[in-house]
Amino acid sequence: MQRYAAHMDSLKQPSEVLRFVNRLARRLGADKQTYHCTPVFGSHTSDEAVIYQQGFPAAFAKEYRSEGLRQIDPMPRLTFAHGPVLTWDRAFELGASKNIGQKYAQACIRHGLTTGFSLALFGPGHRDAYASFGFPQDSGPLDEGVQTMLHVLMQAAHLRICALLDAREQKVSLSKREAQVLEWLSKGKSSADIAEILRISPETVRTYTKRIYDKLGTNDRVATTVKALQLGLIDA
Image 1 (cartoon, rainbow, N blue to C red):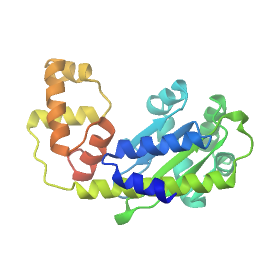
Image 2: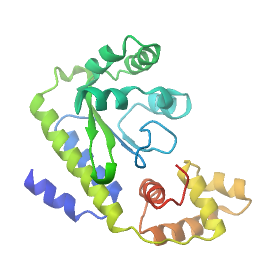
Image 3: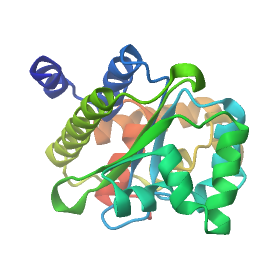
Image 4: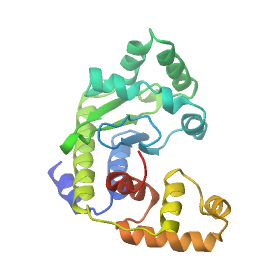
């Protein structure tokens, strides 16, 4: 574990940290991972939360992001109330008395998402986050040792991400057009979509995107959105 922590400290981008944990999680049998990074005191399911998601069925991911599941997801709230480690089946039981909990659980079961656990993660300055790991349905009962190891790894990952964000705190000045491109990037729009919205060419969008990455010290959309939220460059 110490070796993994040392390697994590050498990583320079939040996305690199999350991919590193994802590789380790797969070795331990987890085939799904989520991480919700939220502005201080923000909701883990609101539109301003930046969500990293790997391994979930495409149909579920689409339903979660665009068909209302994100807004009613009770898992973060239940995990912070009953965690910091909460298995999915226990969460389904806790939410069964409420219609929202029932609807979300039914969606998970429909997509085969029944084996896994969620984590409440705590960071400096109230930078708390939510994460979860899912396992194949036929993997059997969850091993407590695996849960503990992934909990430790994910908490370390969250602290590293917080440290990276703190280390990069700086006054960033964006042009009006860069700010417009950043806003649409944070909303998940493609370069082609942004080009159409702003009535500029996709190549020009890519040029502005590169400038934004350079100014924020990032190299992908997830890290850029997280940093922009922390710096107040986009509205929460």
